Image (cartoon, rainbow, N blue to C red; front, side, top):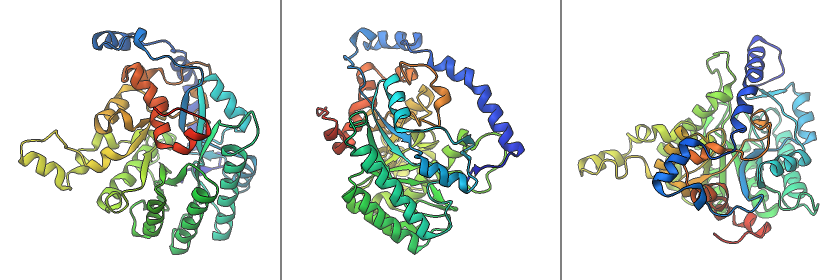
Length: 392
């Protein structure tokens, strides 16, 4: 897990790289206009900017953002955690989040807790207490707040009290908290990490939790964590290790039968599913699907696992066509949901306006409205009801 407060050479290199990246972020986000390449494509396909649906102010639903309330920040700092994924723990408050949303045309953020979650706490009792405090705060002060400036601006995924060494007791606590969060706190889903201390989703130890999430019909947000003993290339692990860990979890769940045994769980994969869309065919090769398709002369009809096609994928840190076209080819536009990964991506959003102009290179205006709004509303009906959104 890459959570650290040490001023070692690895940390110094990371901070230098982040500072160097700031001008690139400014240049990228300043491009709020319809790109020239997208204009040419849109003209050829009949999706020219003039045919765009009318957008009414703040209409985006951001399904991948993080919250760092002060009590949680203090707890992290007390345990020496000042970096997450190679990035210094950023500033966060409800007011800062609303300001960000207002600048980028976002109506609502669905917030979650990033790594390390509560895994840094050695006591199961402490993990349960912190998870309960975070989830109660998310529900009471954000999702179901009566504060006029914040009402309707937040949805939320629960954090689970899982530790680095997952055992039956940990999983039992996670089951209880998932039920409390969804049924009592009325949160919009459950957040879970790709791995915990080297145990990946799909490990048999998680079976009772998978059963509970299936019973709840939950939307489950899979967020990566930094794996143990990853190769030190002198780069922050969020650049590449996060994507690999997400992929490991999603592939492991395929071969451990999770998608088949728990069909009512809807899975939302962070960062466009890591590397999965690009290698979905290869990682399906040990299933029957590609072999059957090839034998009947229909290779390409369904040459990746249908389970991968049923997952949902967010656009966080992945709006460019290299990622989005691969995701669309695998799962279809209706399974892609807009996301920013704020506030960890604050350096990429120094201005205001269009938060992801690169999406125009993959999606028509109508498709982009679905990605940025209606797809999320369809999967988060309670959120849609809270904000008074009309059905798509």
